Length: 120
Image 1 (tube, rainbow, N blue to C red):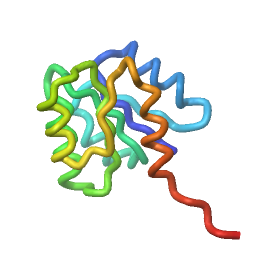
Image 2: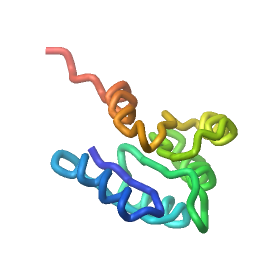
Image 3: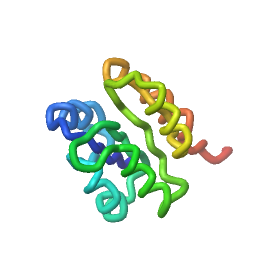
């Protein structure tokens, strides 16, 4: 699988990369302004998107990606428990919204959408 990690924290991107990189490809960008271009270029299976970033926030970036790629799989990963953010993520069509301190909840979301192997 290929992941696009969009977060303005380099430490967070490195942490996420360390969890996935041994078995998967991880592409990073530091702002929502770069997210659509990175998505087009790398065609990831999953986008792990922060909500709050300095230039272009994750909600705006997710809308841009979903407008061109409606089947894009996006999970918001945020430190904000704001119900408005969560509601907006749902309206955009995100596959999930997890808190950074509960990051491991990303795995069940990803695995629940994994393609099933063909019958033998």
